[in-house]
Image 1 (cartoon, chains in turn green, cyan):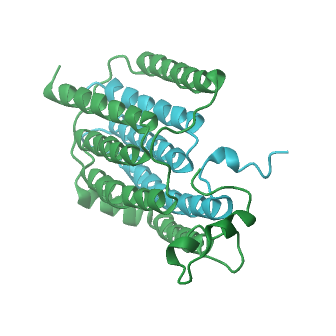
Image 2 (cartoon, one colour):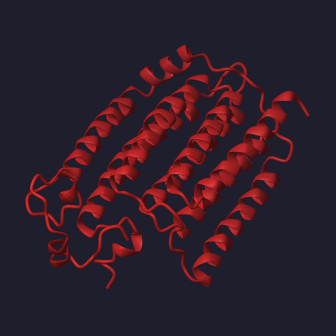
Length: 194
Length: 104
């Protein structure tokens, strides 16, 4: 067992534990912060596999942008802090059964397919990756950039506020004229802050 | 390094993501679980690229595909959060069980 093996096992244990904390934590903000650790362990796995550029791109894009975006989403939706409602007995047992069975199946397949395959660590120079990306994959790369632009414009159009669209949850926060509390109950039947 | 370690790590991340999508009711948490599943897929792509590549011919296609998955994941979380914001504005809730307009 080499040092690389030990590091990989350590990263895998930390990543799996923090991923479990992401889905089981009662507080959604804690979940978002555990997601940072899980995605950093994914970046460490990339480093151990020799993919340097991909590791730093993962840190920049996910830890730097996506988690911040998710935290913004949590703040804007005023996610309930504290115990969240869980389903009944079957609703709790079914996801555990499905994911444990899937993991068992995948682990058996992996151990049967690669019983003693060794990965030789060959660090990928970013220059080589760039020449492959901009020569062989140039057209898909440009299509990807166009796709990213279109989807982000679509997100802006989706999230933009339109006239007369549902109850405004920020009405009490930005209203210049104080609104009586009783008038809120006359509109939409779904209560705020559930 | 043994090839099974990153592969099993990726399988574990994917199964945790599946559990999160199936069990949690908060829409933002479901998005986080989808992010975990996407990350596990990128680990798989890079690992298979490292298994199949050699010293003389490093196979970089796996890393290029992982980079594509990274960008698509960023776009997905942007659009997904916009939809969650719209759901919250219209229903005053981020519980995915409340989004049942097309159920019957």
